[in-house]
Length: 399
Image 1 (cartoon, helix red, strand yellow):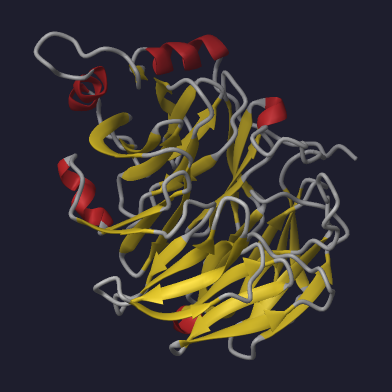
Image 2 (image 1 turned 135 degrees about the vertical axis):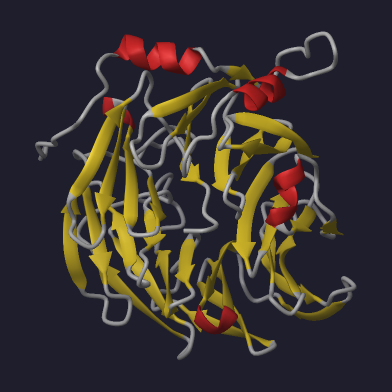
């Protein structure tokens, strides 16, 4: 069913393009005379964007004002690019074909900080640290995101996995680094390193380990093909799925809740399993509850609210607000029209990004982006962009 959506569009696509192109920065242009990159020149001249959001599109990035949703910058960047919050109040991390690049979203320009390497993967923020995992090299980089303010790479802690693999890592408040184990062919679990990168604990009972999330009391979870692997109080604890193959690959947590929200898939042979069930992992009790929402979703559909609410953007176009303790759907916000998850994971689909009490939802088929108040469920504003977007993120610190 198609839901009527009230939108507040710009006064015209031409105005959007004019405002965007006037401040366009090309990520791969040659530097002009004097050695100043075009991104840096643009950054020094442009007014700062307030509470910026960054959305990827085929060929670049849109930088949007977080309050009005008006496009403030357009940055050309060929290839498939991904975007994640860096953890401070002005930067995001852009994953490109060549590696991670630090982008000053308030100025709409790349800085000089780069972390080169094939297949840049997960970006994790926890306990005042940001962790980058490069799948093609197995390298982990850990840094304090406040150190990005100078435009250069901050001092980093580094660790290289025994073998490159699609992995993820997180640094805990005490300095322990928890990182996945595996190879390009097989992923098996996780290990824990002390401050000197000396191994102090490992677990290899998490087949197909994927994704990470942290819950209340700093319990960390990694998804497995048969459940979830927790690291809590210095030990690994396995939480089994209720099904023989009950795979959890994407999880999101909240410091306010001991319960994690995860996806849940039971068909290992499916090219793309459009599951309608999600998992709620109680890290305090080491148990898992699976609930059926009656609608499918994608890996870009999961988030947490300001009070620890579990949020799922369904293919029915509804943002489902779930009480993580009971699994009850407490609120339904009609956010976008009906959609279907594409077979190719790189293809655009509605994406959910939450900051404070606001849920930002993209609708690429209509080239739109919407903002909703999570308390009232009311739409705050919408914008129509020149192109449909794919990934969506923004600055997070100070919110």
